[in-house]
Image (cartoon, rainbow, N blue to C red; front, side):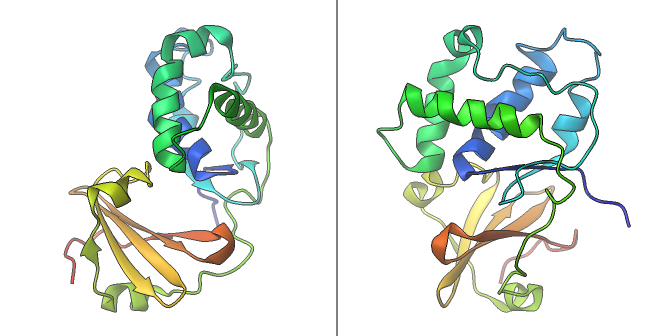
Length: 196
């Protein structure tokens, strides 16, 4: 069984910063001319998630990105602050908070962890329950709290848990959120294109 290349971070804010800004800086921005020239490919093709087993489960040739460098912050710091404030829902998220998150992302990038694609607990909501649920479209204010949603966002409730469906023409994925900030990613079959 082959593990899915996965990069696990501590928080949704860190995930949003990596997905929405840092991956682009690796491939065609701040680090575009770094060697080896294809250094960005494994990072940009890996699944990025939030979990307890921080780090990456794949081998790479470059992991020394200075995500917290002053030069990078001078170039895109304001944009990263907007991403982080939206992802965290904290309008008071500061430059100090951003630097801390970027240091933790840098540390996670240097950490090889075979368990980074594993959840410690099984998701309490099953795929059959997801398929039978009635999802309603999320409002703009609800979407602001989930920067990782790239398509149309839909939500369904399951007792103390709720599921967010990120639905676009190319893909569909579900995040199940529960108490104590626990959450799980569920991969949906490619044919899941219609909402109930």
